[in-house]
Structure formats: C-alpha cells, structure tokens
Image (cartoon, rainbow, N blue to C red; front, top):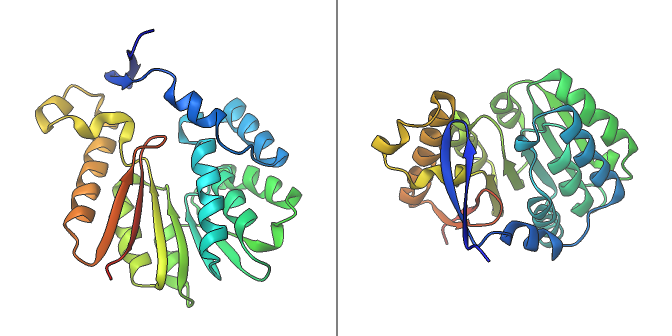
Length: 233
C-alpha cells in the first residue's frame, strides 16, 4: 500500500501522508442527521464543495456545542448552512446561533434547509459583513466558528475575543490550507496567485495566534486543519 500520494490544487502540489486517513476518520465518525446529509449532497451538486466543512468538522462542532452549552454561538461564513445546522443541533432550548453570510444566493439555499430543521428556531441568519454582525452582538459569545474570508480571519478573531465568554471557545477552520502553510515564502510563489493569497493569509493568522499571550491555542490536524482558541488562564 502506498503511504504517500500527490494531488494537484490551484496549480500547486501537496503530499498527503497515509493515504485513506481522511476516509477512515469519516467512516469512524458519527453519521449526521439526514437533513445535513442532503445539504452536503446538494452543496456538492450546486456549489464549490471545497468550501464545505467536512463531516468530521461538523460532528466536532456539534459535540463542542453540546459540551459547552453556550447561550450564544456565532458562525462566521454560513455558506450553505452546514456548520450552522451542526451547531444548532447541539444547542439547548432557548440558545441561538447567529450565522453570517455575505452572498445572498448561498444564504438562500441555507435558509431553505434551516426552515426544514427541527432546530430552526435556534438559527438567526444575518446577510451582510460578518464583522458588522459580530460587533452588533450584546451578549457574551460562548462558541464561535470561523470559516469566512481568510484575509479577515484575524479581524473576526479579535472582534469575537472582545465578546468571548470567560469559558468560551473559538474554532477556526482551514488553518492548514491544504498543507500549503508548510511552504516557505519562496516556495509559495509557485502557487496560483489566488491560492498563494489564501496561504499567506492563513500563515499570517496562525503566527499571530501563536504569538498572542492572551490565548491558549491548539491546531488539530483533522480535515484541513482546525484551530481551537480560548482565553489564557
């Protein structure tokens, strides 16, 4: 069995160790509700599925939400609604998730799925710039999931930290950016310009988080990298 495989993305290349690990992880992760499965299938058929948080991330969000039991959660980057549905599933009655989306077309698909969910009363979809939405919130944020515009990750994080509950948690997606964060700046110039910009934004964000003494952080190597951030003790 091969232990490495190369795949092409945006004109660059990455090396995947232990071929099949992602599939194995998904196969050993709880199955999401049928509605979430239909949303996954619909998104892959109509939009760019690379922007869809995978099943392992979705179940992680549900478990973290259930464990933390936040009164208010924030979802930065609704896309088609996957992460918001997973968070809403884990919320207690009376709690809510404010989910932020800039694209009305994507928000409309998400809205349709939210309407079918038994947890629809827990979901508050806001269309517009996420930073403005975050800054308008007047309650402590118990859980936040960041998967929006990569160049604005630090701004989202700062705005959420200002409003984060004492035991709150920030979850940040795509912090490995398909492994491109392992490239040095010279090597990164070989990437497609669009992807190079994404890589640069994530690498800069990761460094700022690592250097920030206000927080504790852990980068998990699941999916495309998920960073957990909490206030320092």
